[in-house]
Length: 306
Image (cartoon, rainbow, N blue to C red; front, top):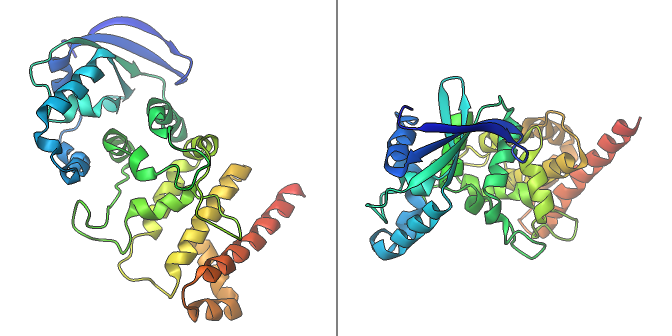
């Protein structure tokens, strides 16, 4: 850290943390930041670019992008004990295409207040808020794979040991369904008539920052770890659980929730469980599962009001 000159110590009102502000040459910061990730294959978090035609050879385009990024001058990191986690600046520090000779003076704000997991997620949402521009009420809207871009996924792996498997798109297939595609349902606002529309941006922000968000993501990824469905329509039931779970979180229910809890309840309802397994998939299958969870929602609401 001797190549980084501390020039200020203050409190960030938005990110809710004390910080140290350092002045450093870009080339030095690149070396320092890479030293935080010994044992990591940083290229693994940049694989999406391999599937964009011509992106690796478009030096002029990426020289401009990297230079434009450096003009903002700011990078962010979080310090916990003797470890550092980059929060913003992956493309400018770790990608190997684009401008090679640029060596501007830049600044890095290192958060020093011990933050809880969900507080770190809130900070990451603020630092990546520009990606939410298309997350409105329209069909489609927010997409988790776009939001959890390279640096965000590196942060989640290094800090929370969370890895997203993309179902053979960028690496060896180990899922029937991509983790990104699956957990995207956590951001669907489901109704009996439809489950195609995404939550508006304010709800997405609330979901990404509630106190159990890291636990929920780990639970959803664990539940998506299969190559063959354990029973017919497991996948549809799993999607229904995710949409139910996000409704509960938005309602303020922060109790522990697992898919296993509701599979057990499903199996206790022998009549419905048998009916579900015999269905040929249509949207009526989803509607039946929605009604299953809707009944549970009503029970939970009544219990919370007692």
